[in-house]
Length: 146
Image (cartoon, rainbow, N blue to C red; front, top):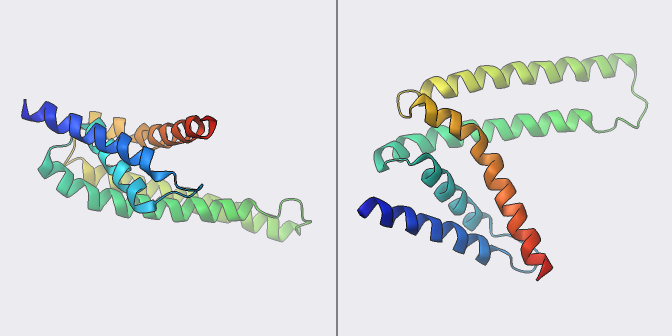
């Protein structure tokens, strides 16, 4: 009974926070982060002791991943400009370096998590960030129609 109450509370928190976030076209980053934490915690069915160990590892990995993805995105900018062959090659080489680093980082992340989560939970985690983003996008789209 206690577990069901906790799950219901987390779901209400996620949906309540998502609804309360949209204020004049801007989102409260803190509330969005709290909703993301609740969403992932609930979907993975994390126990409190798992969550306590999981989130610091996840946050470090996620921050690093976002930095790498942003850098890769920056490498693709200016594609309409005429790049020298050397600059184009340099950008491609850097992209591959970043991708290799991301693979190494993800392998370490999975290894670190394997002592905290089951491998099934780790696989589920892979799609949860995208699922959360889709959920937020859909909620915003629905709110804009109202």
